[in-house]
Length: 398
Image (cartoon, rainbow, N blue to C red; front, side, top):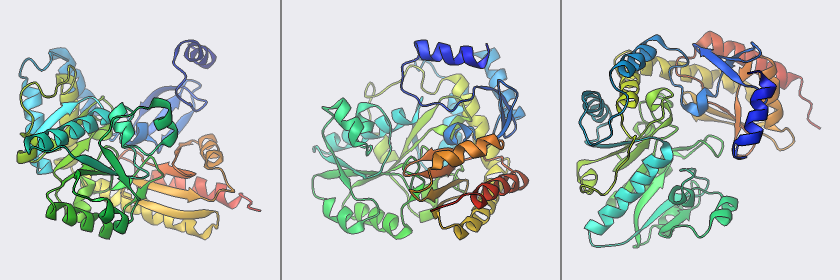
């Protein structure tokens, strides 16, 4: 099917919810994608921070193929060795003792919300969950409610009750909102969809300590920041805190749909039989992929290598502070954002980079988001930096 036919089929049959770039991807190899016209692109999108090992990674491909030949799915009516092996590895690596496996980030966050509410019920209370302005936690009704998108809220109201928000990175407002009717706080250490906006170290540490002093659950959404993206396996490790619950997805299985909700023993055992479930969650195929990704990260040395390359990327991007239309450079590890002034549409940079063989995407308030595979190399970064510098040098700001 040629590119025009692909677009015609999409226009005729797919629900009109996506704005797609004007290319169709055919296949990938290493850190590169190839479109249906044979063009080659170095990928700094990685399926939105999902394809942690790039494309056609031989170890991941072999693990997936081996599992396909055995069994892909049997439902959670039965035990499987691959799921048991994976949750043991995941809990050991994370420091949590309980896990629930699902299919996406939104589902992982739904699980976290339900789990927190079950903890409240078990304590004989009914409390609110507090989230940040600028947050993105998903597109289901509950996760949309804790996602800061007023337009979406209006379209899909009435929304579930029991949620409130505090001002981004404002500890005084956070403290004021942490009233007696709040039972849990849900937060991203870096707001990816809002343009790679990190919370300050002091805010996160002080917010965590305050929650602990009030016996309020601390939930960290690691959907985009987890699995080595920021230079550590989980971003909360940068701050010396230990949340009660974390949620994972995106890079967890290298491109196979999967999510996870991890919790401490006390919190994770609040659920009883029948309180939650999933048909596909944690099936054999997803677990085989996730187990291999985690093995490569922790035992194969990729985590340490990705941390070093992430630092290299951060140092290289610092060069762009000389351009007055780049107003901020943010992020950690291999999760970076370049904020452009309102005079320069970030979309134009996205298009110019694609013309030069580099894929990026725009997030939040006119920000170029860079979340390449964790396998990206310094030399590949050098090529990208040169292309971006060429574009910046030719950009005129009046």
